[in-house]
Length: 167
Image (cartoon, rainbow, N blue to C red):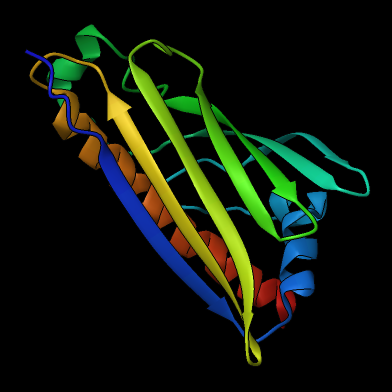
């Protein structure tokens, strides 16, 4: 039996900066290549960053560094939980849609998120809402929780790196 509940996650990040300054960090390839020593993921491999007057698309490749339940290895190589994170920014309203494209077992793992940058006084606030669904009988919810925890840990480290970059 497959658990039919999708695990949802939220994250809010805040910086003493303008939303435009924060967005420029996220669109800078050198920011991504400078992210090292992350605990939950590999350093991102920048696949592509494209920008025009209305949108920007950031494509990064990550490997998640978490310990999955050993039983999941029948379905997923636990040493290669990797994906392409494709973030499409609307530059007019500073919102983004994020697709996570799994390298392996893409039919078993689905994830997406939305993000928005908003100015609150002197602070830029990034709000993220996402969901993860793993279609593995009896184990899906356990794998989802591990993946979501890894993603949340990564987002916290990423936010700290943005803060460092803005300083």
